[in-house]
Image 1: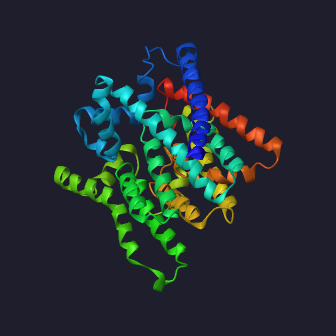
Image 2: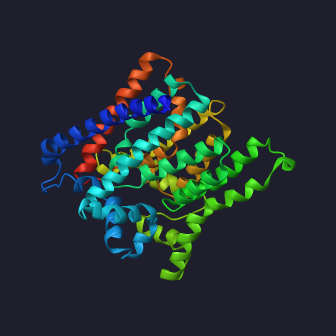
Image 3: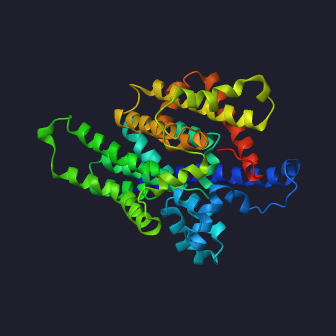
Length: 368
C-alpha cells in the first residue's frame, strides 16, 4: 500500500508539472502569439476542442446528427454527456476534465506495465518522452486519445497478470472508443498464446473470455445497422475525411506524399503538413524496427497492426497523433538514448515541436 501511494505521488508530480506547463504555455501562446496567426476571437476552453473535439462535443450534446459523425466512436462522447451536468452542462470543460483524468490514470498503468519488463528509472524516462512527444498535448484536449490509451494500457497490464476477463472488458471499452480498439482483441489472443508457449494443448477455457474484447465494436455496429442500415457505416463515413480503406498501393502514397517534395510545393502549408505526416511514419517504422528484440513480441505485433491499419486508409492525416497509441514503443527510448547528448537533443526537439504544434492547434490550424 505504501508503495502504491509513493508511486501515485511520483506520477502526480510529473503529471501536474506537465499539465501546468501546458496550461501556462497555452495561455501565453493563445493570447500573445495567436494574434499573428488568426484575427478571430479565441475561447480558451474552446481552443482545445477544435476539429475532432467539436464533433465529440456535438455528439455528446445532440447525438449523431451528421453522417460523417458516425466515424467517431461513442464511448468518449457518452462520458462527456454523463459528466456534463456536473460541470453545469459546460461540455467543453467536461471533455477536458475527462481527458486529463484518463491521462493521469493512463500514466499509472504506463508505469505498472513498464515495470514488468524494465526498471523504475527506465520507465520514468519513457514516461517523460511520452509526455514530451510533439503531439502529446492531444491527451488533454477534447479528443478520445487519453481514454483509449488508458483502456489499452490497463488491458495489456491485466493480460500480463493473467486476469483475462478484466483485460477483455477493458479492451471491449477501447473498441467502443476508437476503431483501433479491435486490434487489442488480436493482440490479447497473441499474448494468451504466448503465455502458453503457443502450444494448443495448454489452451484453456480462459480463451473464451477474450471474445469479450470485440463486444464494444459489435454493439456499435448493431447501433449503426439500426440507424443507417449498414453495420459498417463507421468505415463508409471515413470517406468524408478523405480516408478510404484500400489495398496498399505505392502509387497512392507517391501521388499523395512523396510527390510533395516537388519544388513547386515548398513554402506552402500543404508542404509542411505532408512532410510532417510522412516523416512521422518514417520515424514510427524506424523506432518499431529498433524495438525488435527489445520489446515483448506482443507489443511489437500490436504496434505493427496499428501501422498497417493506419496505412490502409491511403492517407496519413492523423498519423502524428496516432503515434501516441503505440505507447509500447516509448519503453525503448531510454535504450535508444544511452548517449546523453543525443538524449538531450531528442528531448529538446520533442519539447520545441510540442510547443509549436500546440500553438498552431490552439489557433485553429490542423496539426494531426
